[in-house]
Structure formats: C-alpha cells, structure tokens
Image 1 (cartoon, helix red, strand yellow):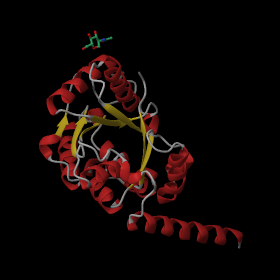
Image 2 (image 1 turned 90 degrees about the vertical axis):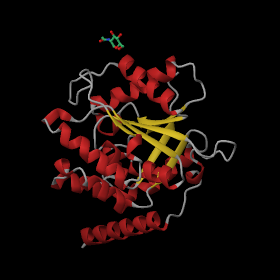
Image 3 (image 1 turned 180 degrees about the vertical axis):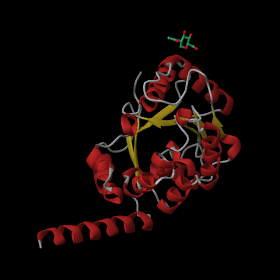
Image 4 (image 1 turned 180 degrees about the horizontal axis):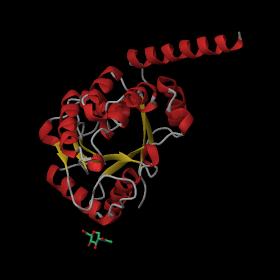
Length: 260
Ligand SMILES: *[C@@H]1O[C@H](CO)[C@@H](O)[C@H](O)[C@H]1NC(C)=O
C-alpha cells in the first residue's frame, strides 16, 4: 500500500509543478535576469555550446526566456557533432531546432574546426576557444555570454572545455563590461526529477539571490520537446525519456561566472 501512496504523491507533485511552470508564475529573481531596466534594456547575448542539440537539451528555458523578452540571441556551436559521422545532418538539425526556438538563423554559427572535433578524450584548446569567442563578441557587439559551467551538465569534456574557453576569454579580454553566465549543473538525483526540480532550483537561487544567480522557468516545455525532435538523428527513445524527465527541460539556473 505504501508504494501506491508514494507513486500517487509523486504524480500529484509532478502535475502541480508542471502547472506552476505552464502558468508562468515567477520566482523572485526570474524577471530580472539581464533586465537592468536602465539604458540597455535589450542585450546582445551569445550562447556558446559544444554540439548540435546542447541548445535544446540543456538551454531551452534560457533561450525561451531571452527570445520572449526581445533580447538578441546569437548561438555559437563549436562543433558539428561528428563523433558518429553524422555532422552534416546534425548541422541542419540544429538550424531547424533554432527555427523552432525563434533564434534568427543568420545568428546561428556552427563551426567545424579540425582542432575542435566532437568526442570524449578530444581536448579542446582553451586559447583557441577564447580567440573564436572573442571574434564573435567583437563582430556582433555581444554584451553577455551564456555557457556551461565547469562540470558541463553531463561531465562531457567538450562541454567543460567550452566553459574554460569562455573563462580564458574573460580573463584575457580588455572589455570588462561583458558579463558571463554559466548553467549550473545539478546532481544526478535532481537531474532526472523533471519539473519537480523547479522547487529546489528556486530555493537554491533564493539562497544566493540577486546579482549572482537566476532561476529561469521554461514557460513552453512543449517547445523544447519540439525543438529536440528536430534533432532526428539523435531522437531515439532514451533521449525522449531524457527530455521528459530532465530538469533542464523545465528550469535553468544561471550563475554569474567569476573566473578572473
Ligand atoms: C592553442 O591555440 C593557440 C591559438 O590558436 C596556439 O597558439 C597554441 O599553440 C595552441 N596550443 C596547443 C597546445 O596546441
């Protein structure tokens, strides 16, 4: 009998959490992210990821937040994800996903650099990454960067190197006005709690409130699912499960990077 009660409670909690997300009720810091209300209401934001599908699997709450508030979002994907030889297909899939996520396609750049190839055990040169990122910042007048944290959600070395590349750029740059944010990696238990994780994320962000941490709820999780579905070559049953159960489909916690 006990387990029935547990299952029922979990289902109720799950539905309640989903309702909260879909109703769009906000956490205290949520509406303030990148919105200082001052002279610079709209930002030029650069999202830096490692592989096609990172944007939909991990960052879709952030992307939805930014595009729905009129910020100008650029996406830099540092590889075509060619570990299985499907790079050319995956590149097209990323463009289709970005169309769903309302990122203008001319603002999506996908690199295929010989030194930055997809794969475990492939070390990406942080200096090279920093140079590439700097080029984008200058070309598009970027004032805010968003990327992985030093664990990179899944611990994938390419994700982690992207983080260190951004850090290297921040460390070396003379443009002190650029702010950078990292997607906080949650532990394995929280990672698969789906919408339930919003409560922990909100609490966590409140404890570190204001300037340094923001919790963004995904107002349109259906859209994340649809965006992920554009990555047909990756859209196998376990990824469908991942997207449904992953907390990153419902909430992103962003922390200001301070790796000076
Ligand atoms: C890393 O990239 C920089 C800049 O492109 C280059 O000067 C340096 O030699 C590279 N380091 C390694 C270990 O390949």
